Length: 71
Image: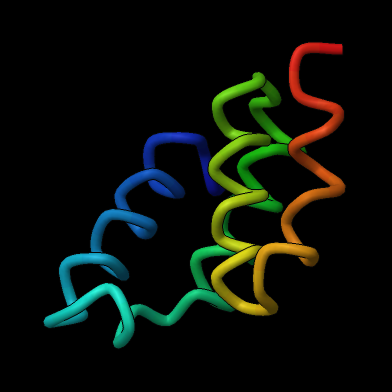
């Protein structure tokens, strides 16, 4: 079973594999945060997912989820 700590480790590993922010596999990071948000929801996970989404499609892509943080 996949838990929040495994997902957080996978997110950290994805970041660590990239030499620069531009080389980060942002779609992978977004997908991992999407799963993490479903099994361990909290405002920080939602914010981080929105940031990852913005990195994949530009700022307009990530703006929607960030609006709902804290509601």
